Each structure stands twice: as C-alpha cells, then as structure tokens.
Length: 178
Image (cartoon, rainbow, N blue to C red; front, top):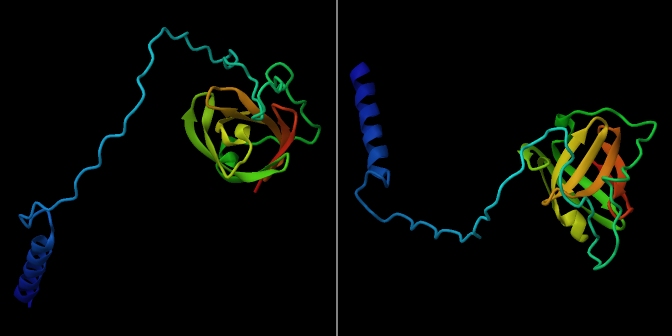
C-alpha cells in the first residue's frame, strides 16, 4: 500500500515538473517590459530635519483659478470646534468620501510615511487642489490634507471617527466622511 502511494506521488510530481515552463526547456518566456523614463534628480544641500519646525513651503493652495488668492492656513489655522473628537492614525486609514464646494470625490489614506505625514491620494476630484492631495497628517484632533509640495490643502476636525469637517486653503467648507 505504501509503495503504491509513493509511486503515485512520484508520478504526479514528475507531471507537475514536466508541465512547468521553467523546466520544460522551452525558452518562450514573455519579453520584459521596457524601462520607464524618469526625470533627472536635482542636486543641492538639504536643511537638517527639525521635527518641531513647521513644514517648509508656501502653505497656500489655489483652487485652479490663476491669480486667485488662497487662505494661508499655516498662518491662520482653522479654529478647533468645541465638539472635536480625539482620533488616532489607524482611524484615518482606508477610503473616504470628500465633499467640498460642489466637488464630490474619494480619498484614500494610508499609514505609509510620506513627506509631511502619511501617503494619501484622491480619485474623481474635479478641483485641482483636491485632486492634488498626496499626504495627510494628524495633530491631536486635527487632520491636515497636503499637496505634493507640503502645502496645506485643507484642515479638518473630527466630529466622530466617521466624519470630519473643516476648511480648504481657499476658505471653502470641506467634509471627509465614510
């Protein structure tokens, strides 16, 4: 009985190995994809990191209207509402819906470290500022959405772990909810 099982096992293994393209002797593999061109990396001296210093950058995000002034949220931050709820980073992870000035789209927050906080991206946003969100950060009860250059796109406070309300850099109200 054991010999029959052993023979069946050896034969099935031989069939699997014979069917595998890697061992078949056939060099008909898929051709590799061409390399993606990249832009050259600039050179320059970097400033030392100071964890207590504010993120460098203009802090002003325009809503896609050339010459339209934005609200500098780094100078005049959104005031904390009285009912703001303390949240943790893990509460932010995942998909969110965004509503701001007639724009309704999706945001995805990750816990991957990114310049100025953690990685984020948006889908389906018509507003250039919202479509440019690439990072988020949490400071106590406040969530800050940032663009690729570290500029503040919006500041929000949690009214629950499922709802955030605040203001964009242009002064428009914004809601982030599940």
